[in-house]
Image 1 (cartoon, each protein chain N blue to C red):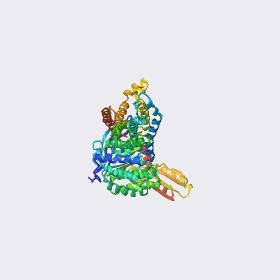
Image 2: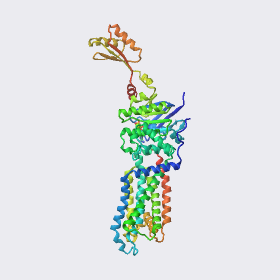
Image 3: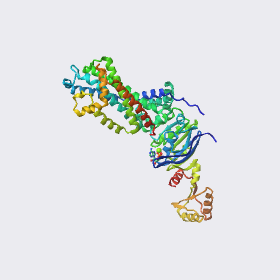
Image 4: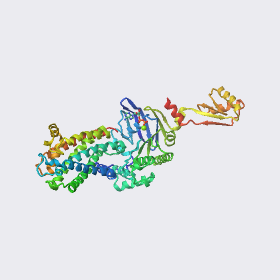
Length: 307
Length: 263
Ligand SMILES: Nc1ncnc2c1ncn2[C@@H]1O[C@H](COP(=O)(O)OP(=O)(O)O)[C@@H](O)[C@H]1O
Ligand SMILES: [Mg+2]
């Protein structure tokens, strides 16, 4: 087991009567990406705020990069980068000045700060806009500057709270590639998202949060398996064969749904595909096509969030 | 354990860098500069023209020009009004998310407040110097205290503004609402300004206003600044300085407490 860079144990956080986090535990090994998935109000931002020392937990314990978020908050903040849900850049300053400011606060000399700022502006494709006040930036540019700001100190652990919400597809892809690059360099990442494709693509493991509780956790494949729902889609040569086929599948205890000359039926395991083929064969039917559909993370999300 | 890129910055560096940031923001904003110059110029012009005949009344020392009487008061007044901007600026930064960024960095939170306070002090110093220059060149400000007396009055105004800046930083860090602060500030300052010795000698005010003016701390600050600029027997300078210092210390503690609460 490799070193844990984020470790939350039974963390709860209440705002008055609202229990925003209710006994959340997570563990993120070094160099991996945890996707925190959940609808609005699930508690994602609250968890990020607790882990980044912005909010003290009501109860429970959390360590980031080996340090306690309550008692060693300074050490935690020295090792993390945070891109919050809402852009936090200084609008009146240029992109360059924003980055230099942060580098200086982190302890860089003037020279080092300027070099680091140039490097990041280049990396985030902001060189042309470097000297303009950030208030003239587009939403995507502002997001990129915000992300760059959180990377100035080359953090060991990066927290991204809905990093691509509200971005156009090209900017989204840009953020994804940045995250992948960082991870390949050994950075540990916790990202929250409402998008399944994002979690699916970036995250090594996914934690689904609902009303402040972890309702599911595992790799994307494990989550899909946990839901169990897969579907077999049978396409027949002609509509006239549909009734027979439906009868055959109902006969072996399935619940097929017909539409045109295709029939879909939920199965619980992939070996049931063989049963479908056998049942059809017994009636003398030779399907045009037969396919086993993977459950999407969408199915997982729906099933869990509904539960 | 991986090594950190940088080892963190000292308290002093943090204050310096953050103060520089606020000043740069000010310099970057021509509109802000324009209005902070315009405001005292307007005040000086309006009051010196409207009230200039007052010097003919019995409460004025013979030979005293109104601008000599008025300008030290306006120094204190402007410093006081600008101090409100410390609190408003802090709250605006909180709303804009800049403070959220700073809070995620390994820096001491008090440096953010200190930097705000210092950068406003520098800004007000510039504003007051400009006002004095304007007063000398346009309205013939020529107080008996000379350059030294005028600088002493300016210094006193700055100390008062510095103390009040902490007061508004304290209010801002607890209230966290810029509009409300503006309103409260305006409502509080208007009567403070007029029910004082700033524009006319207290003896010239109606009886009940005299009572108010005599308990108004601004009266004492204005009298102290005036006594320095006009080379009169020095009154209340120690009082103004120690009161400002007291306000600063108490309010700084309250401000830091309020600011530590999560956003
Ligand atoms: N500062 C706060 N005061 C009161 N309630 C809050 C505060 N922050 C969050 N909440 C509540 O906590 C719950 C979780 O919020 P949040 O963590 O922002 O969810 P998410 O980021 O997943 O959308 C919501 O019900 C929200 O209204
Ligand atoms: Mg959120």
